[in-house]
Amino acid sequence: MCGTEACLIKCSPVPSAIPETRENVTLINWDTLINLDQGDPVMYESYWRKMGNRCDITFSGYQSLSYFANAKNLCWFLEPKLEEEIKRLHNVVGNAIVDDHYVVVGTGSSQLIQAALYALSPTDQPEPISVVSAAPFYSSYPEVTDFVRSGLYKWAGDARNFEKDGPYIEFITSPNNPDGVTREPVVNGDQGILIHDLAYYWPQYTAITSPAKYDVMLFTVSKCTGHAGSRIGWALVRDKEVARKMTKFMEISTIGVSKEAQLRAAKILGVISDSCLDPTLENFFEYSQSHMTKRWQKLREVVKGSDLFTLQKYPLQYCHFTRDFYESHPAFAWLMCKGSEDDLEKLLKGHKIQTRSGRKFGSDPKCVRISMLSRDEDFNIFLQRLMSIQGLTNGN
Image 1 (tube, rainbow, N blue to C red):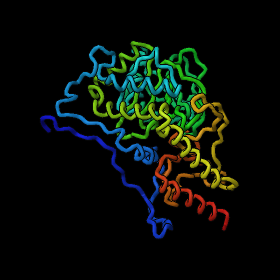
Image 2 (image 1 turned 180 degrees about the horizontal axis):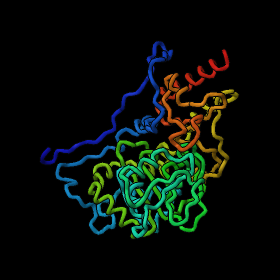
Image 3 (image 1 turned 180 degrees about the vertical axis):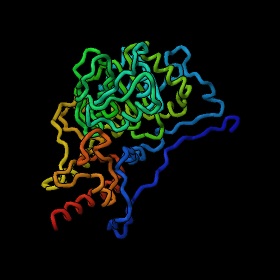
Image 4 (image 1 turned 135 degrees about the vertical axis):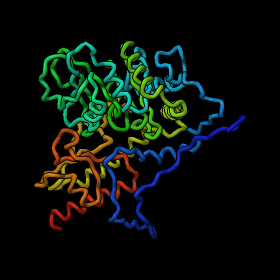
């Protein structure tokens, strides 16, 4: 690329297990495995297709050459436009206080989890600090914590069973992944260091009951907007030294974060904020909330009256964003088996439904996590297969 030529960045569709159709009749391929293990947020494609070219951005060949985005900023690789749009969106939604926090950008929230562990772990202890989270906990916490076998920190399991004296780090995921429940700290200790993972604290999933204001808060573009492939997450950090150490972790591991990805994320976040403020645009959160609500209604209708399955229930809460009472409709369904089956993941896989076992969340194998963020075609096939399992179990 040379001169003034530019690269236009656009979203493109991804393959899916889409059923064949003929004369408006859906023909389900029962040999196709429906993968609802991962939280791949392709459900959002329908909204972004409606937005047309509103999120298109161009880069000329001479742009974004430098490592630095703002050398005067503590997080020197953070694009100013992304920081602006992050703060704007939080203010529009009202889900987090940003004014007295530093913004640290990362390659998804996964990198930020490691950066936070590095920044918060004391260096003057005789042994690694214990890292805990209440079960069922996010299945990646144990692996991310122990992957590099750090001498600073180590995974110590379920926070409810943690009784060790001394400092510890506790992850509070709220709403929780996998079960969508609102969480508070569990360990009753006076030396706890808390990391609040708020990836799902957005109006399409749960009521915004108050703006979060914690020392370290983690967010990600993937679950907010659906753009998981851009690999952008951010942390809101109250303490300057913690933010500096997190930035240093990013500097050592990847020398910053892609500018193109940051600027694309900034554009998308800006479009979402605009959609909330401009009545001529379709509100992103209203659209997404409506989609999630319909999916949960369909799933609950299938499970209703079942002798085999049951689902997590959620209370009505007042949402300050929608100004209405709202029942949570999480990104994942926590499906539980009431029958004699000891391994629900195995049962569902036998019917071509790939889920994630409760074992991986430090919980019961009679439970599984099911993504609610697949395309409509995949989700509808899942519902039909679930009904067929219940029919077989009931002897119908």
